[in-house]
Image (cartoon, rainbow, N blue to C red; front, side, top):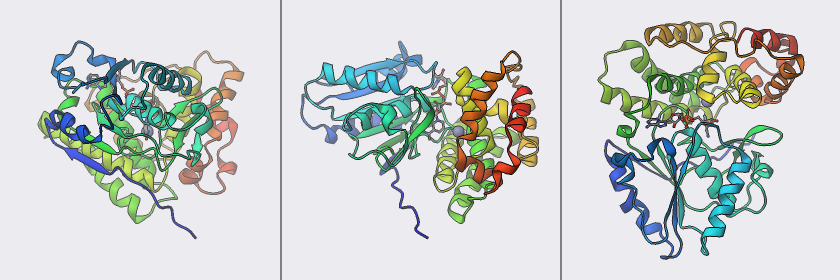
Length: 360
Ligand code: NAD
Ligand code: ZN
């Protein structure tokens, strides 16, 4: 048996207001005055000087606002890379992503594709990246996905929704400033926060579980309960703790896997464009049979925060459309092995998945 030797985020700052230090942190990484830093920033911050006035632009640095309305696509990564190459003679000094999982994943992918030839879709999979990425920094502004700490960047390509999983994917630097999450809308706070909760449930109840994953998963799970169930935290405490829960949840799945909710939510996302956070919630709500305790608590949290999940997503789908979702879900073999074991194919039939999707 050979064990995986994983890279991790090499540097991390934590603290309210630590975003102010971004300029000092990246300055030593500037290769020369012609090699710019490229800032990829969620366009929800356009016109928000509280945040944007602190983005340390100098020399040829460039700020690109990017919409998070849709999840990242391989074609979008290719376009960004081309735009950067055409605009700047020198290879950038670094890519800085400021936003949620969508923007963080784009920043990771762009930093990889700036040094690796060809199109982003060619790197979807495991360990296909040959050359180290350029310096990349992640600044999360919403907590839950664990994208700030993970070894993958999830992209939708022409054929599949799959991550670029590689040793070069993790950020070189992360800035955890919980204050940046203060204006996240409540529903979105819940959906992305539940991504973290679901990472914990899927990891802790999986066949891949080991002490490494369990230690991180249990911590993140406890933090989620403090935040979403116990209700005795101040806003600041809640923001601080959710940022750390996201981190631990991400670490937990590094050495294990996610499960049923993620497999099925990838199907929804691929066919209908349903976003990760809300999609996971929609699926998880119907998974009592796989995660009885986790789903029970989830329903309580949903009620406590008065969250109404979208209904009837699959009401008018054709058989062909169900097949597309089922194919995407079934293609994620490691998730099913983690969720139900090696003989998962006997238990997880197409009919079973169709029945579940029909409830959503
Ligand atoms: P997101 O980045 O899609 O953002 C959700 C919404 O919140 C957007 O409308 C965005 O504009 C808004 N928002 C973000 N920060 C805000 C702020 N501070 N104030 C107000 N609004 C704010 O959401 P997400 O749930 O963080 O990310 C989902 C993405 O993450 C998906 O594409 C998913 O595939 C990916 N993901 C990646 C990993 C990984 O390990 N790489 C893990 C899980 C999910
Ligand atoms: Zn997730």
